[in-house]
Amino acid sequence: MSSLERSSPPSISRTVLHPVTGGLAAAGVVAGLLAGNLLLGIVLALVLVGFRAGWGAMRSGAAETVTTNTIDPFAVGEPWRLFVRDAVQAQTRFRDATVDVRDGPIRERLDRIGAGVDESVTQVWETAQRGHALRQARNNIDTAEVRRKLEATGSADLTDADDVTDRVRGAFESQLSSAERMDSVIERSTKRLQLLTAQLDEAVARAAELAVHTSDLTQFDDVGADIDHVVEEMEALRLAIEETGGSSSSGSVGPA
Image 1 (cartoon, rainbow, N blue to C red):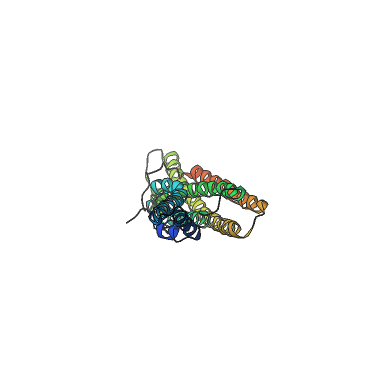
Image 2 (cartoon, rainbow, N blue to C red):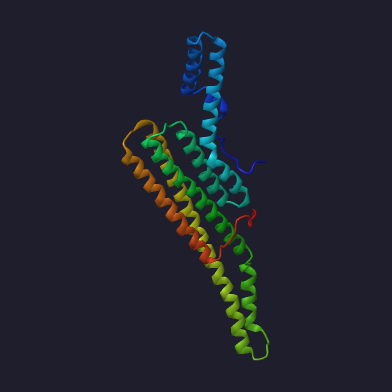
């Protein structure tokens, strides 16, 4: 099974069938005819088509190589896995929708937005890792067993019973408090991450639409600002999870 179950980048066949590619092929044939050599025209057409296909693949796939090699939704459990997959799919949709935009001011805006999208995906991945680690830590606390032991301390016959019993009860109560805090952070983080990935989807859809239907550069700036906000909120969420105990280094997590 692939490390990422998501739509693939634009295929070579789709690039070859693109109108721009067809124009390049026709230009090659015409050049050969003008030179009085049809075979030369066919060769030129093939060279231009090959260049076009390679250029499209390079533009759509350069940053994707990093994502594929570093992000694996199946390394974390649900619901974190779903958020990572949604973010990666949004990233792919953005690349597919903007790969053929020509160089110029709009291309420059889209490249900046694309960098923000890439950073958003990275933040989702890192946040999901922390959330997964926090869930694993929470699963290690058997609250039912802790409560049973806490109740049993009331009848314990121990030397220096008052002091020892208080300390034992304090340790059990601390475990229960930790579990409650983890539950609260996990619930809030899940809802927040769901909202942020939805906002990322929305921003990507707007960017794709603008790439085709507008030349107003300020609208691209607005989308870029929205994605920057998502990145900032993702980072704040990740730090909040880490403070609760969901610290994890890359590659150290596995499905729960």
